[in-house]
Length: 247
Image (cartoon, rainbow, N blue to C red; front, side):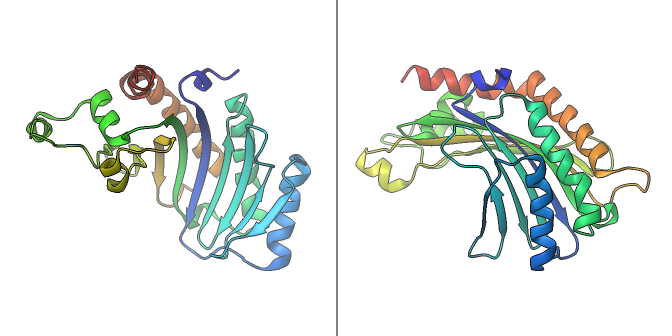
């Protein structure tokens, strides 16, 4: 069992490649690409087109884990929901990046941004924003607002982006997404829904001529997991899990 599986109700590993130019949308090209991926992962058998025109190939959703892949006009996304081993997710992402130069005509020069993202979902029936404020705290500048008589937190979604080197082309972003609205707070009735934590390491801009997509993603993954282990797990994920367990 993956070590990250004990930190949240669900977790996932995603790769996103944003391109400067439009991606091919021809029937033969798209189907040929998905068929090649399916040859490696035969359980990815569900193919459909969204209303937005995005193409999606995915596994069945009722297994508790799921591989998926999508092609948007200027973005390719690869994801694995609840993988038993993160290396399995990385293998999937690497395969996609190996294929796209030949099957979708995507060059490292065409890279606007390449992301490696780890996501964590916590199921909670209650005021998500209030819980996040309680678990992670607020800055001194905001504390007085919480002391206003009758005040209830309606929106609190901490987000921070930091540069990982001087050129600012490599960045890490921590973002928390809540799903409570004012209507639910007013009525005091909350459905069970997910609080999501996203931690992304991104490389901006065209890649160096001697660098491949696969090499860049491997480096981003290493940085992402190192920062997760050193900071995010103890400062964000565990406090959220502990706050939920006491409710």
